Length: 148
Image (tube, rainbow, N blue to C red; front, side):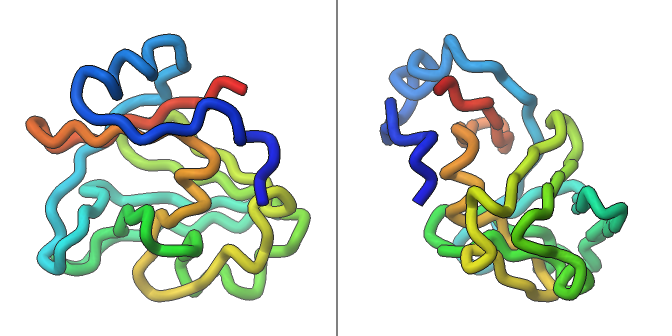
């Protein structure tokens, strides 16, 4: 359990959501698209980096293979290429178009909350760490540094 982000948790929509994020630091917007199987996915390539020096750029090969964003997925699903490199003390950085790098301390989110697959998924641990606003009209996803 991430005990640092327990305050000010909320689910909000429309203007209420935008107002609640007004005082938070916006990290940027990235393009999203509706995934053919019900969820949303990140439109750009994504680079996953570990403080050990491993960098892996995930490039989707078709519309079906873009990285997914899904608060209902329990884990942060990383590319399989990172399986043997991540440790409980790793610092993970995720980069995507239009957004400042997202940083994750594996010790805080827990190695048990990380999985590996050929298609990455920004699951629940991402929502623990950052506030995320879906801009549905213009197919954008906003990331905000959570004010503690």
